[in-house]
Amino acid sequence: MNRLLTVLGALPVLLAAGMGEALASGGGGGGGGHRMDLTQHTLGTVALWTFVVAYFFVMLEEFTHLRKSKPVLMAAGGIWGLIGWVYVEHGMPDVAGEALRHNILEYAELFLFLLVAMTYINTLDERRVFTALRSWLVRSGFSYRSLFWLTGFLAFIISPVADNLTTALLMCAVVLAVGKDSPKFVSLSCINIVVAANAGGAFSPFGDITTLMVWQKGVVPFWTFFHLLIPSLVNWLVPCTLMYLAIPKGQQPPALDETVTMKRGAKRAIFLFLLTIFTAVSFHNFLHLPPVAGMMLGLAFIQILGFYLKTTYVSYRQKRGIPIEPGKDAEYVGDVRFDIFREVGRAEWDTLMFFYGVILCVGGLGFIGFLALASQTMYVEWGATQANVAVGLLSAVVDNIPVMFAVLTMGPAMDIGQWLLVTLTAGVGGSLLSVGSAAGVGLMGQARGKYTFFSHLKWTWAVALGYAASIGAHFLINGDLFNGVPVVMP
Image (cartoon, rainbow, N blue to C red; front, side, top):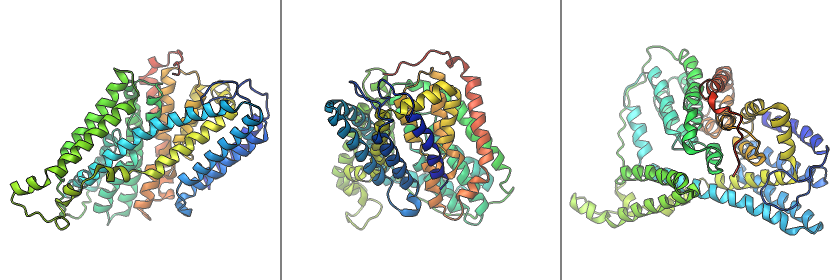
């Protein structure tokens, strides 16, 4: 409900702005040709309300169980259908079509990139890489205080290469396994994991969808993202240190004996995932090709590994004297049945379709002219720093993906320091509330009753201190990047 009130509260401002002076051309949305400013048109009001209502249902997903992709897909089709109708009526049918194709192309690159990344994560999960890591942590005999630091640290270092939701769920499984007798430990650790996972993803092009979009757009070079390492670390360490003081001293979780062995090919899959990241970066940095081309090459790597696992299944067992009993041996049956397209099928399709709907909705609003008005208000009247800090606060109540895509569509004239600032704030701002990120929402479901919206809200002040400290650290450490030279958008 808080999210809804925020969105509805912003609506009158946007509508009032839409009644202002007409622009010569609509902002954002891609495509060329003469565009009409439709912010004063009935279409503008209907399109804006369509997106607001759709996002209202997205925010209620936890209660309605209506998958978030459905309402935004409906909204995207409706908004662009209205735009196409108006442009046909004015004798300019090709202008809207060109803009829509531009948005679809942007989505296609993001879609294929994420599909390969999700396939690798699913393969590592199927090969029991994450389960084996969890098993080691559970049986290692750490104290509650040690586990608090360790799970947070691992979330921080894993999320730059894996998505923050997968990382958070993995660490939360460890916390739930060892902390079943200490609800306070579980609650504090979940907050710590959410903050760490979001902070870890903020300094890596692979760590969050927002950083990936900024990198693929060509706004910030690959290695420049790592200037955010220290600010991201500060963002996690400040609230982590404060919460650590509330963890009971000297308490030890009960000893657990859980041993899990990774399946054959697990280490090869890890190596190929790292090789795929290398090819994506190399294609972009050295060959000036879209990173998705390197990722699709990496998909071929894992397909070949899958072929190897299937064709050598019989010989592998025969050499070790293991009877071949497909369907009965839980340890090895996965090899003969391993099919990479099964892992492709396990991708988060609802999330991928959600991205499509969001990108087209925001692109449509930009084409109508709303993002040009928002850009004028935020980045000209407020100033870049205030606007970028506000973007982070907004991402605590609205998903950071539409927020960042809107900023990229606006294309404000900012130097590299400001682009890094908005990347940082959009990435870590979601930690302010449990509903502000996929990691927080996921953990509320996994640790139901122990990690809640209000248990997180109690420590929002500590997370906010970390948010402010990370911004200060960015200005202090990366001050030379605030050189006033605007980045030229590709």
